[in-house]
Length: 146
Figure (spheres, rainbow, N blue to C red):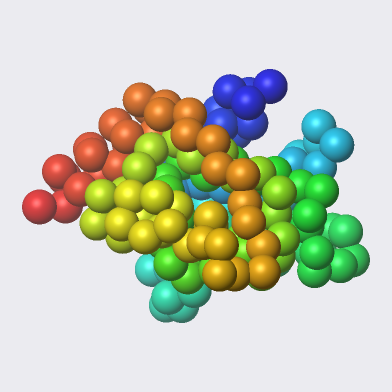
């Protein structure tokens, strides 16, 4: 099932790509059902907080009518940044599946490890899926922009 949900996240990342956004997609799952999908909308909305993870968390909270997502998992194509890792902690997401690492700003083990910092009140189970398609989408996007 992990790869099915990551495929949906990749589809979301492709939607971002079509909008000239950094191609990142996120999916939140509860009880083996997708309750939220999202992709980056930072450029279109001119809002630096509109990362795929933040949008997906907002949608999931609205869908469930609560802010605690402790019985949910998130699938994201790129390792979350510090802002998104903080939101994942705050929303109490149980498990985070990551498609590829971010060597410049990753906050789930690459540069920082916010999601598993013992000093914080919540610890997230992080699973690395290392999906080649996630990595290729980002590499192609940045190659074309340079």
